[in-house]
Every structure is written in structure tokens, then in C-alpha cells.
Amino acid sequence: MVCVGCGGKSQTPTPEPTAPLPTAGIAAQQVAVLPLTLIAAEDSLRWGGLLSERRAALTKADSVLGSLLQARAPEVTWILPDALRRAARRAPGIAPDPDQMGSAILLHPSRQRPEVVPDPLRSELRTLAALVGGGGAGGGGRYVLVPAGLVFRRTSGPADARLGGTAELTMVLADVRTGRVGFRTVARGEGDDPWTALTRAVKNLTPGLP
Image (cartoon, rainbow, N blue to C red; front, side, top):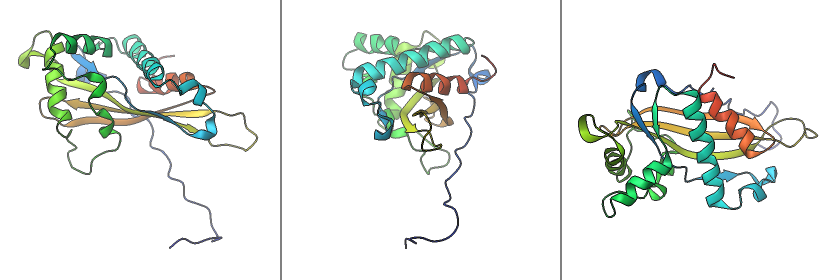
């Protein structure tokens, strides 16, 4: 039942704070970073002109994420999307296309406990990680970092406030051997344009640095 005009304040859930990437647990390891496949923005932001070219926007977002990960968490050997694409092209018919792997299915957490990456994405991650890995047990890196989706929302505030947005970047770290999701968070950052907001969101994944 919907109650119209009821007293009391509306209960808007408070977002959980961004959890920092657990880089200590993956230090000195190769971790593949999948390309982003999903970007969406609320119409009220009026950022359609900045995001209308989907492929260009995805490429820009991948660049922001990759460069900041390498600069702010150099203790991890990040294998970025371009390297994944090259590995896939070297193994046609075997390797999945990193841009067509359906990673957006991980945007919302599964009710399963512990959360497990569903097939076929799970087997595709395992294959891709083995192809890009350079040694070690199993032939590749054990973990994959998945940017499951990037959503831009209007930043709440006074009606006369300057138009700004909040980037919400869902990040998932999965173990390709077991399929288990070991880490999940939504990184948030505000800005007057999508790339400033995204940059601040990624920086919140690696706090303690400027």
C-alpha cells in the first residue's frame, strides 16, 4: 500500500562507504582488470552529450580506472583491458572477447552466500586469466577485478545548487579458481563532469593518497 501525504520524513537509505581495495592480499600478483561494459546516467544530469558515444565513454572510463590503479596501487601487477584484448586475439575460438563477457551481471550482489560468479562468466574469467598469466600455478593470475557497472546520479542538494553528479562504480574482485567473490564495493565520487566524478570515485578505492 502506498501512503500519500503521510507524516514523517521519507527514509532514504544511506549509502555504505566505499571499501578500500584489499591490495595487501593481492600484492605482487597479476590481477586482470576487465573492461567496463555498462555506463548509465540520470537524465537530470544532462551529461548525455558527454556519454552519448558509448564506446568512447567506455574507453575513457577504462583509461581513468587503469591509470589510477597503476599509480596508486603499484604493488599489484594490473593487467589492463588492452592486454586482455590482445591475449584474446591471439587465441581466437578459445578466448572470450573481454568486451562481450557479460560482466554487468555482477552489478547487483547475488543472494547466494558466499557469492559466486555464475557461469558462463566464471569459466570465461578462468580462461582469460590463464591466457594473460605469465607463469605460476594454473598458468595465470588467480584474481580478476571486474568493474561491473558505472552509474552517474544527480548529487542530492538544494534545488538551486550547481548541477553536479555522483559516480557510482561497482567493483568486484573474484577468485577465478573457485569463482568466489572475495570483495565487492560501490566506489562513489562527486564532480561537475563524469570524469572528475569517476576519478574521485576511483581514488576512494585507494585512500590515503592525494
